[in-house]
Image 1 (cartoon, rainbow, N blue to C red):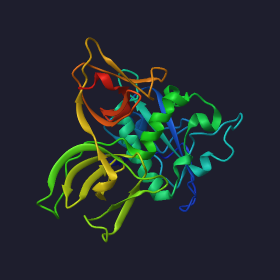
Image 2: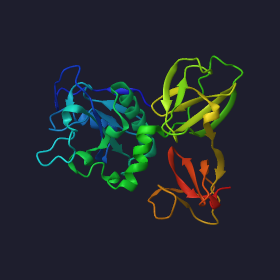
Image 3: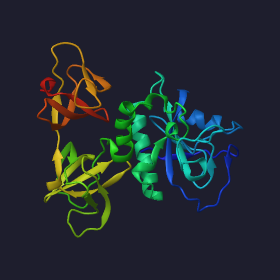
Length: 305
């Protein structure tokens, strides 16, 4: 996750107590092509609207302190969410790239921010919601349908991961792994992330069943992992299934990566012939779960070599 740059605005918010209860994180899109920095500049003057954070593929800008109230999900019309309001939420705007899309890297950066805020304020995954969920405004406009939103939501709360450089200092004889993996525990159990490669080391976090992680090193039955939101530490290797490197091997043309196992599901990305992906799981129905360019989805196994 990029370092957060503060460019605090003197307007477009309501001052609040430093102990304001933050119960929701509301996801938006800017709606037009612009960078996080340019949006931060735009809201330095009166606009009658705002958000706490703006995120693009390189930067995160904060224009309003968390404890103050941004004007991001209010309405003079009807509320469709019983509880979420400006007064108890943090607003995050995802910015569009030059092609008018929310890039994969922007989603990964937003995931890091969302997960750090969830941890900081104790916001559960069920309270990470869209602007649409609050007022039925078409925001973020590309993620209104459940089929388009659900994979992004999964990434935001549970972590598509970046490919980090290993930061091992305590075990010089640790071996390099360099693969993505999937947490494999029996739900509702979770996998503890620890500060060192032993069960008595202090706990630094936990991972849910199915969470995608990057495994950089192995030592004495433990993996050193990184997940979006900058969670780093050691996990018991018995509860991680490592992925396999595969090549897209179509006869001609590209391969569609979908949001579910079947051609009825939405296309998330189009993968070029010869692209390298990581196969996370292979299913008996002929489909595989893969990760490519920070996005998790499904492809027909027959086209993986």
